[in-house]
Length: 455
Image 1 (cartoon, rainbow, N blue to C red):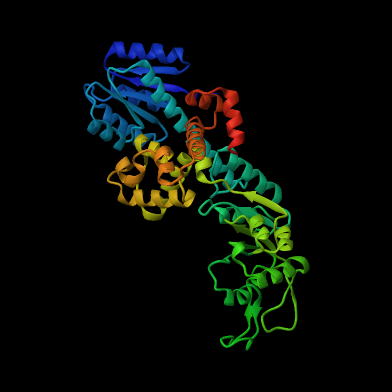
Image 2: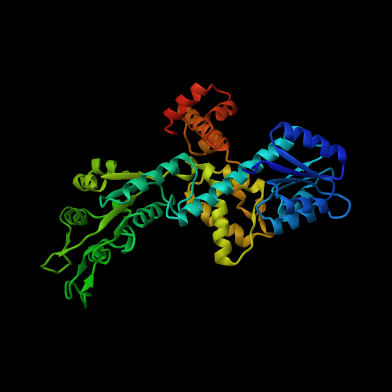
């Protein structure tokens, strides 16, 4: 099997090539060296490496031109530039021409190793993303639901387990997490996939019209009923009906929905006869329906009928390790839709996006990437292309103070939870590494993860 850690070092200085070959070989990399950009192109064509470490200034072809050509010929390569003539402008020029990162000379060995470690992580994410998409086309996963994190893998497992059954499913999650995508995935994985999938937002239709929308009406049933109308239960017959924001349904309609679920029949407004329907009902809500039941705003019997199986979609802040995969997905989708040619995102911009808490979840990230793609000045998304409020890391202390919270105990917990989330995101869920970053014991971190419900 070919090595996934093959590095091509390109530098006209022999001592630099020797130092890097020795260092990287000791760290387990398969290293090849080239004294010029022209020679590097030849070697890359013969046996493509995974990573290229190239000097910016060399006799003949420059490192930036080499980067441009490699990016054109082999876009899967990850290029890291090196230069003793370091400047922000030069770094940005390298990134615009396809470089993933930039190391200034004279460099410390740790800086080179760290840059390669980040590049490896980037390639792993791209590889996993490609695998997810390939599996999606093969029918093994879900094209629009992307994520390598443990919370999303749990969602995928639940979808696969429950999709084939007719039983009702309640999807819970914050706004923008992708609840409708989960419902569509349930439909696509089910034996009903060739029948209609009908979504409706219960909070977007006036209560006076909702009954007619759900069950249809007969001509003359009310003032504007000029003809018979089929309801969405009949439209979804044989397929799946997705009732979003089910918590907004009025008490009277809750009773009628319960009857449909129990008996499988609907009666149009103004009608006298029932019609049999075969519909799988999937519902979603941002509300805590259990609390709504306790408060008397939602029928207990309907809640238990809807909550046979439950899928909780995690907020994006709890799966920040999925952000890079989602960024690549949204860039590719916008390129296809808008005709743009964005090839990636620079490390500083990605770091800013990873440091944000995403209150609007995946929908907010999707909209932000579309905005950045449209406004981008080059073919790589830069820090300047994202909103200014995201360009600086969020300050957990400032956020707590701004909330008006005066309890030291509560504020300390909020700040501690924020730091733990950031550490887990930075280490991609590696708790041992996160404990080192937080300077606490592994056992203490496990306790706090359980205490804050972060597992």
